[in-house]
Amino acid sequence: MGVGAALGVPHTARAQKRYDPGASDTEIKIGQTMPYSGPASAYGTIGRVEAAYFKKINDEGGINGRKINFISVDDGYAPPKTVEMTRRLVEQDEVLLVFGGLGTPSNTAIHKYMNAKKVPQLFVATGATKWNDPQNNPWTMGWQPNYQTEAKIYARYIVQTKPNAKIALLFQNDDYGKDYLKGFKDGLGDKGRLIVAEASYEVSDPTVDSQVLQLQSSGADTFFNITTPKFAAQAIKKAAEIGWKPTHYLNNVSASVGSVLTPAGLDNSVGIITTQYGKDPTDPQWANDKGMQDWKAWMAKYYPSGDLKDASNVYGYGVAMTVVQVLKQCGDNLTRENVMKQAASLDLDLGMLLPGIKIKTSTTDFYPIEQMQMQQFNGERWVPVGDVMSGAVGG
Image 1 (cartoon, one colour):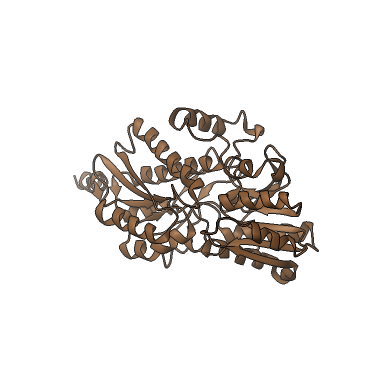
Image 2: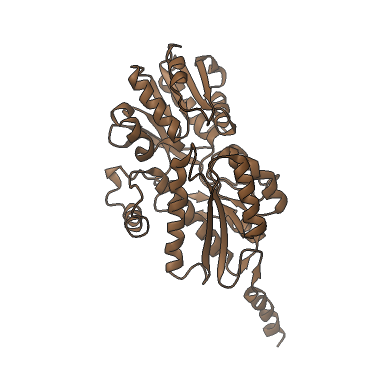
């Protein structure tokens, strides 16, 4: 009798449903801000692809029987708008969590608010290093590799392959651009003298043509292009127009054949070097890969208007899969605290990550992806260079 009673207690506890605002027996409400308009609107496809993935989940019966109610709103990549929209999502719509908001300035603007409110700011679509701070900001978590780690990889690679490089830097004048800049300079270490020119731009600038001309005039033979898609395409195109042919490094967030290299001109993009952690949909080596075939079949059914060459559509698919896994792990305990607890205990293989790269988190590590591979564009696709590198190399 005593044993039966003892066994019955945890069973009852397990069966008990626990909900915070935004969760019920029938739905899970998820909020998001996304730049569907404005200077970073090329990323808007990420929100659309995520909405399409959640539709697939709902069509299959939802998560543990609950449908996802995804409220994704346009903030135009303007931080004041992000603040206004996020307050509405949390206080009026009463979402369980905010997920995948895009942009370092935008997420910075709501960072303190989300942590004060104790509402998950989950898998933000920015690689700023500050998102991995579980001790001080336990309600915020990144997803992609952080910008400083990525920039250090470029710096070390340049020092190894071109020890006397003359480096020019173009960067967005905000937290996003400066995070890359810091990582790059840290990676160069005592080789900082290799930088011969720096130019910044504002997201409100119409073009970066004058900055590219300024950098060319420095005599630089190596160019690190720290830009978002619109400006990345402009910089590639302008460099080609003026006949400047440095060894060109492009940050991962703009390494899309569809939304950046194609408008810049594929011929103009030959030789560009970047890093990657996801499978490139334009690369024929993945033609018979199950993960790629599953993604393409899903795109055809749920997001037929989406560009199969756009790496952002791979990104959105992967991050949507990750949040679905977190919510599955939550079971019937759909509290905000448990959402973060499950997000901090992931060990996940995703079909569209490169072999050897997986999602892994812990209570002290809020960066799900910390490995990347160098790759170079050959005019048609990205070609891998070397081995997968860990972000932990040399700190």
